[in-house]
Length: 95
Image (cartoon, rainbow, N blue to C red):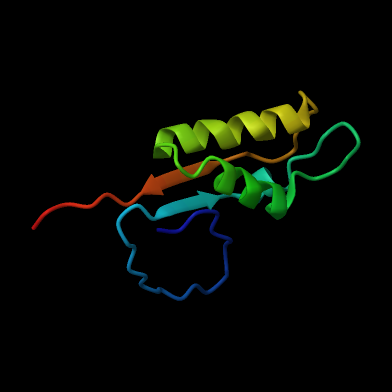
């Protein structure tokens, strides 16, 4: 799955095995580059901390928690980029 593809760039396909209960968070740079009124970026560290803090939630709950944290951080400051998040949680299924 590719998110935020740049034209003219080469991308290499890779495969990763997820374990039961693993969480995959895909995001565009608009999340980490979301600015507050002081022009401070939300940043990767805040995103990682949000994921760690809310990791026990469902995929939908985690997405909403991250969205809430980004929204609180930006406090309605105008943004110049899209803010896109995709959260998936691996579920264990019996064979």
